[in-house]
Length: 103
Image 1: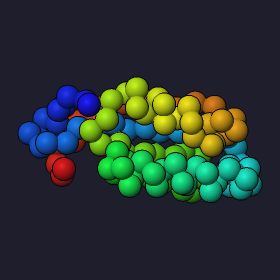
Image 2: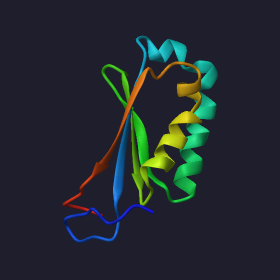
Image 3: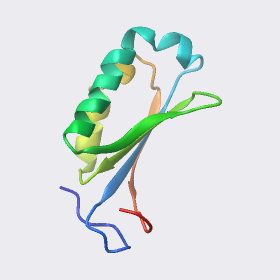
Image 4: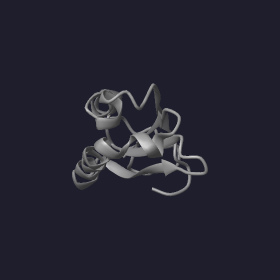
């Protein structure tokens, strides 16, 4: 479990995952979308993912907010993600997020 890096003194520690998508993602994601969404829902139901979705206009990045997990958990999540396995995510970043307002 991640240590509490929340400077606001809250009990949760967060990790931000951003997935960079290939060009024309909306046209390419179809065969993989259900598996991708199901993976996110599973992490949410387990209490590991607080929220997830795509940035729009354009749809070029996916954003996941993980809660109380370590970097290895997020690395494993990416390696098993349908979009990543299909080559639709050429680059991603995993960074601790110091939340100072909210929890």
